Length: 185
Length: 386
Image 1: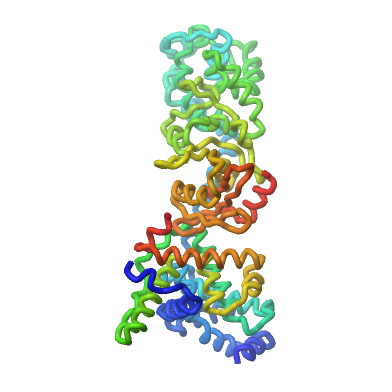
Image 2: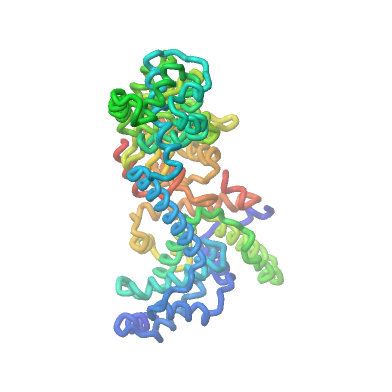
């Protein structure tokens, strides 16, 4: 379905196809941008820019099934560039509230898993943008190392080592009591 | 945090956490976003971007201000406007220069004797000369324009010396130059000719004439005039870069012309390059200190658009990762090791990029202190440096 829409979009510059793709992807694209920027207004701007860039350059996308991941790369790159320009210190005051309650009413095992997931979420929020970008591409969009490397124009070895480090970073973040303080460690 | 080791960090756990994390973000209504996108795709002007607008405004104001300053300088230099105040600005310049020149020849310091008393071959000179302290700053500005790269601080540093070193013969020559028409036509042609190429730099050199260190200073300024004449005052190796900036602000900056309190303006120390590929010139040394950890020496390099910090560790037994960690603490930014002994500084706390590597058992790092330098450019610099 998505591939069809993309083909239609490429062939006819079809506005309906654009809208369908937008509806399918805007939430997660916005979420990726927001998780990097932590500013709703800026995340909206970045989401807009990401879709416009994607629509304007969609012919460059070879594997149409990877549209979502490609869009995420565009959005996260835009967000990272924005951060570079702003030299903004990431603030944590706008973090979404944890959703522990989802698991708290279940059996104990599930509750523990829910707690673990919340901790991992906290750690993910504290990842540097470049690591966050890789984690999203690998674990959310299920891309392989080669695919990530192609999208980010990096060598596969670099992607591997960065992913390894991202995981280590997550692990080290989970061992610290204060997620924000550990950044200076 | 309790339970932190009760689970294993598996791929599934990360996936699930990431799913929840992305799903938990409340996106704005799709209609609102889509309308904005559609409008932009159809060629309508982009709605004002919150993040870009600020920068655009700042950039526009800066550009206008810059153009104004440049045009003012160019105009004032080329036209030398015959405004009512032009006498006050132009005339004192030559006497000032002459005082400086004579002082070099005499190598004496004469107590200040009210220049206004001596400088008055005509009545019209009085107001001009008595305003010397005020116009002195203008002189400084005028000289700065001529020397181009010399800072105002240089001119300011010389100002107190000029009145001190006046003497009667000097002072009586002032109006000759200043009169410019009637009194002594024979002397007048000499002064501009001599003064123009050399005396423009005299304020720098003259201050050293009183000190035995003068020659060294003038040599360094000559040698390093390609790297930048104006940079000489910043090659004070022992002073932290920030401190030097502060002293500059305070008007106490050491310049090549000043003897200084036992410190000499020097080039980069032997182990440090005088410049980095890409037009980065050595600016000075910085000590990166922290408690119970080894001191790292660092050098600041500046180009037109960015400042880089080259850091070296003396400790040959120190692992690169330890070096990166320590540097991270010292710089208050996060470093993470990258592939092939290169490290990337993550933009966690503030956006800053850099590389770290090991050479001959010594860990080194190249960090971006100011400006925007791409990682690739840093790698290029590193490769050329090596």
